[in-house]
Length: 361
Image (cartoon, rainbow, N blue to C red):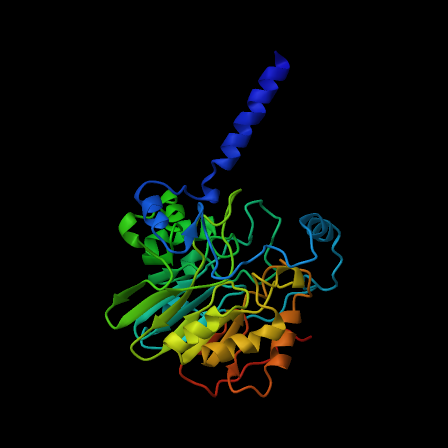
């Protein structure tokens, strides 16, 4: 009898845990029917444009897990707090065009009278398990209270380091519209966002609003918050404003889609591209440092902001290696690489603005 009760109790706990809202919503009803009509959906999941293994050839999941648990990569986490600069967002005139990187892939920007926030993670953790993927000391500068009203909250995909339950839940009263890939809206509805607050886009679908247009474009990655992968769509985005054109990269391995996007929508004034949390084992789903400049050239970009580093350690490289490699590999190229500190105000109009190598001792 006691064994039976123990088993029932354990099952009840498991059900409660996996029913926690942090894991998001389920795909069903009219949302599922729309997804089934997508040309990017096949056999119950979304597909990349090219065959995309989770691991590169010659690697096994057992090997990856062993290396993860025994990893002794030097300098993965900064030993000391590094320099940051917190910009007071609420006091900034809406007439100013600027961007503030907030570490990893979170950033805020104002342009042509509209406010945008991309992939905000401000809970101090990039995992559903508390305390397992903690932000570096001193990097979690911003909270939802620090933001003015947000015209557009853009989400590239539903991984925990890009879509944070606590952050977006707290931001809800300030958000006018959420722009995301197909299926991702189910998470927002589970978290009490209204249906009319959410716009879900398939690749190459767009939405227009008063001189602005946002187009969902392909990325080479994957999605998932619990057990099953790829039930929601991962995306990059093209934002056309009255004065500029911006590419919002999200996470993506290198592939021909960058060239296609550049030819269809370029040239771009700005691109925000991932440059961290890479590994040769994951070359199909994350951009490697030696591929970064090729991505920029394929897109035909004038100014680029490298992100996906500086806040969380998710791969087997030193925390500052991505920034070191990017600045080395992009020297002498025909585009400008911008490396602001976390929280530093970066002008979207002043191409003469200089940035320090703040990651160096």
